Length: 236
Image (tube, rainbow, N blue to C red):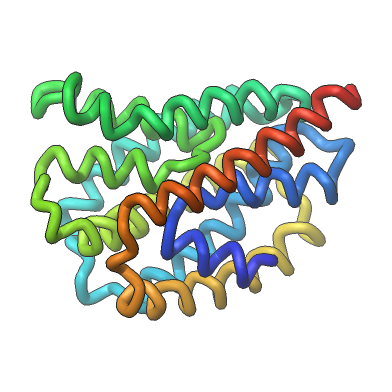
């Protein structure tokens, strides 16, 4: 599943909505912070595979500044989620779906260059708390500065790198909050590493999926996450 979801994550993004149900089924008694933290370890290794395959296209200096701001917010977010009961994943998923669906709208109509860095920090907080659909947020933020529709694939590569950088910070923070489980994140991370590498090559061939196709896939993952987290909430 790490290989499959890792590949899908690079191609479409938003795979936290697929990872959460899997981990909730496998780890019914642990905290939300532990589930999210262990998923993020796999996301980090998926990002390594993705970055290796696309490093020549990444804008390192510009993205590093954005990544630092996101990371500060992410550390704060991890401290919020660390020991929260798993039943809170359902409302978090609902909030994440609303935010993910509205991200392009808010960046288009309510954000400007003046509020850009404040918005980046808030997205970083969200990355630390849950981060579902984070690549969509990052892509929307990057499009504020580069709205050219022909550059979406290139911007997605930048967003993948920024997500990887901030995920590393989330993993370190999760380690200090003692929410990581070695026997869980090790096989997940190995699969995610290969999945991220494979997905990046597939991105070159299938990077021109229509926006409608990508949204169909994303909304299908919404449904899976809602059903699984809803069952978990009911069982509590």
